[in-house]
Each structure stands twice: as structure tokens, then as C-alpha cells.
Length: 88
Image 1: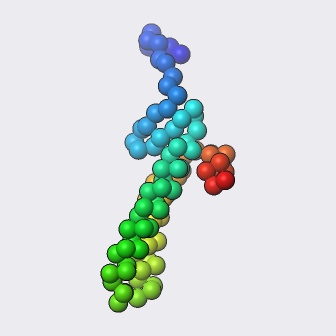
Image 2: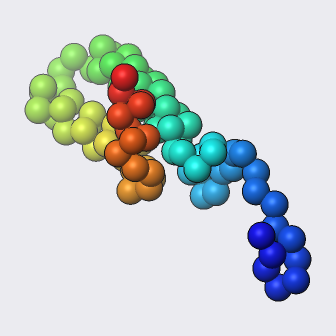
């Protein structure tokens, strides 16, 4: 492909603004999001064990806010095909 007289080459994998893709698929990105969400969940579990006096609703609200933010970052990219492969 040429742009403004210069040849542009394609790379098999790239990361832009934290979104990773390989061969025009975002499966790599979704795998990273799932792993980061699991790590955040584990961290919150350890914190909640030290704070048994917190109400269950409070713990759920904190968990939803933290995990969703981590998991959903960049979720508007990719395709249904990418997510199906991730969840298999």
C-alpha cells in the first residue's frame, strides 16, 4: 500500500492506545482484558478478607465498579468472532 508516495507495510501484530491486535483480530486484547479482570478480582478478594465488616452490597458495588472498568476497556472494538473464540 502506498500513501503520499511512501510504501506502508503491514505488521502481523500491533498495539495502539492499549488495544492489541494480531492479524486483524482482537483476541489478544480480549485475552489480556480477561486476565487483568481476574487479577483485579483476586486482589479485591484479598482486600475484602481483611475487611469483614463491610456489607455485602458494598463489596458487590466496589467489585462491579472495579472489574467492569478493567474488563470493558476497549470492548467496543473487535467483532463477535473475536469474543466467541475468547470464551471457548
